[in-house]
Amino acid sequence: MPIRLSRTFVLRKLHQLSGIVPLGLFLLEHFYTNSKALDATHGQANFNAAVHDLQSIPYILFVEIGGIFIPLIYHAVYGLVITFEARPNNLAYPYPRNWFYLIQRITGIILFFFITFHVLNFRFGMIPGLNSVSVAQHPDQAFGIVSGEFSMIPIFLIYMIGITATVWHFANGIWLFMVDWGITIGEKAQRLTGYACIAFGVVLLMVGINAAVAFIRPGGLLGGIL
Ligand code: HEM
Image 1 (cartoon, protein in one colour):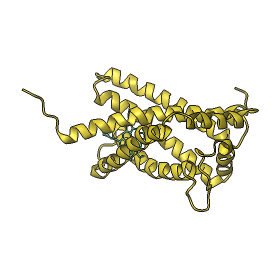
Image 2 (cartoon, rainbow, N blue to C red):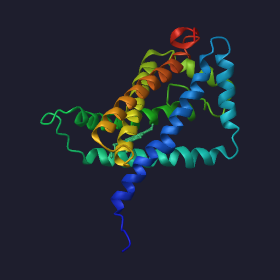
Image 3 (cartoon, rainbow, N blue to C red):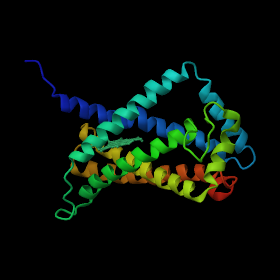
Image 4 (tube, rainbow, N blue to C red):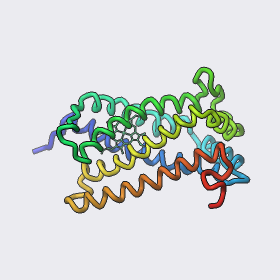
């Protein structure tokens, strides 16, 4: 007898998968590119060259639309639908996993606003009163545009909150994915995978923040020691 998959099941699986591939992979690539700014002497040139290299990928517009924008819009919009269907019961059942369930939804809402702001601010230069130049179209000015924005304390704080929310959402999302897709089975394996995801999240958070700091302090948090 053929197996019939419900529409919700397929939409839900696609939502989970899109969080890992391509969005999670893109996040790792993004932090890697940003980390090019870390070199205390050549950070500016290295970062601008990295932006230039990305923009010279053949068919980059289609890669961006198909590989980032469409999956992102799908994951974000369906994620908001899932969020508004949720009925949190954390006060009655205050278990860690129940709090993680709620924080996954809160960080999703933060991400929705943060990513909209971030894309309009840097990719398109369209936030009134802030940067008006598209970084992608002016790789030679990329470092200068980002450091100009990050020199404003409120903007830098927005990025710190956005980076933290993104890393939390992704690290907890990997755990959810591994359990939901039957990769991590059994209580002990799920607990150990939880610790691994926390460790991964802490390292990724340091990498993300260090790269952001490099735009306002040569060499990043450690001033170029590493
Ligand atoms: C833009 C706004 C976003 C919203 C509103 C959102 C919302 C959500 C929600 C509500 C869930 C939980 C789904 C569930 O429990 O079934 C989720 C899961 C997830 N999200 Fe997002 N998300 C957003 C952006 C992102 C981004 C940028 C990434 C990648 C870095 C990402 C990666 C993940 C992963 C890996 C999962 C776990 C999938 C699973 O449940 O198996 N999300 N998202």
